[in-house]
Each structure stands twice: as C-alpha cells, then as structure tokens.
Image (cartoon, rainbow, N blue to C red; front, side, top):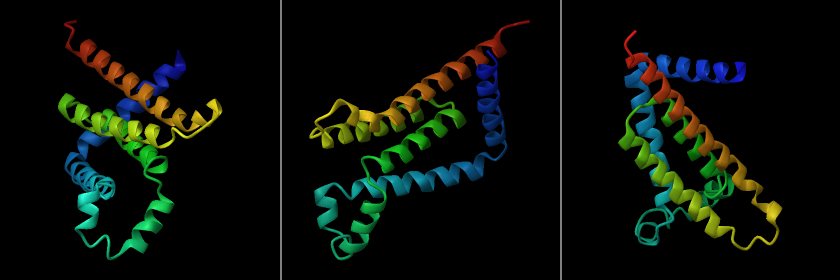
Length: 152
C-alpha cells in the first residue's frame, strides 16, 4: 500500500507544482506539440514533396535515423502524453493527445508487421506501461477530486 501512496504523492506534488507555473508550462507544451506535429507531418507525402524538406533531405534522414518515429519518437510522445495526464484535467485535451498517440502506436504496429517472433513485440512494453499509467493517473485524480467534493 505504501507504493500506491508514494505514487499518489508523486502525482499530486507534480500536479500542484505545475499549477503554480501554469503559463510557462503551457507555452513549453505548445512548443513541444508544434515540434511533434511538424516531425510527424513530414511523413505525409504531399507535405514532404512541396516543402524545403526535399531540398534538405540529408538533414531529415539524420534526424529520422536518430529519433525513429515508430520507436523512440513514439516513446517520447508517450511520455509527453503521460505528463499531459498528470498536469492537466481537461478531458477534451486528453482525448485529442491520446488519439494522436494511438494513431502513432497503431502506425508503428503496421510498420513492424514483418516481425516473425513473438518476443520481438517487446518494443510495445513501454506503450503498455504508458497506457496503464495514464489510466492509473486518471483514476487517482478522479478519486482525489471525489474525496475533495464529499462533504465532511
């Protein structure tokens, strides 16, 4: 039971600290989301062919080799989604970012369909953990709010 209490204490300390610096965090997350959308938009063929990306193809190849969009990029996006669940309460925002994350995870599943062994699916363990933690954080925040609203 002490692990659950430590987890709750960690969640709510981050939640409370973030609400004291809300403006800075909002600006930072808007910049991060813009970078993520730009990064994943480069895979859309009609965007990639009509922009300066084709002129600087070697730079983008190095970026994609470093941060693979279907493994490392998806893990980074998952951590951002988890931080979104901890920091914010907006259901609409959580649904939007979760749908985007779900599309990326589904796309990566399609990309790795050529795997032949079951154990090769270990690359999905971080996604399972992130989804589990998002559900757990949502439940704990709902439970806390319910306890705060209950009359004494």
